[in-house]
Length: 201
Image (cartoon, rainbow, N blue to C red; front, side, top):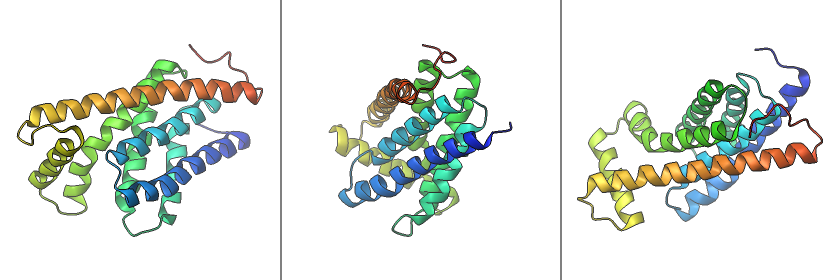
């Protein structure tokens, strides 16, 4: 898919915004040890990328935005950037595939894109932990259960319920993020005088 110079600049702007979110909020969330910070960053980032897709409704635009954000992540404070960079790329890829399935940007496409990216944050520790850091999958699994038990106050032994609640929370907040991204995107396009007739309610 070929992009015009204006479209490339637009995607670069949204990619930079996603990257700034990762650099700024990511550092803050890490410093205060915020629970489910990966989910929050994922949803905000894909919200930005989805709005960018509204401005450049072409295949490949979402992954382009994600690549820009991933590159900017290199400038984060601290040394642990490989995992987050992989996360950004994976989230952008998931969002791209979902948005491509829907074709034209729509509220449902945005909701499912954010939900898919949000769920990835549950899967990523198993992928990066095994491939990059040589962690035992059992250790990653126990870390997940421990986090869920602390956040939701569910007994550590209730693994099924911990995972179920985590999935539901990720889907709910992801869906909310997608809905909000759609609404904000339409408002932004209207304010900037862009045509919204190609979008689907």
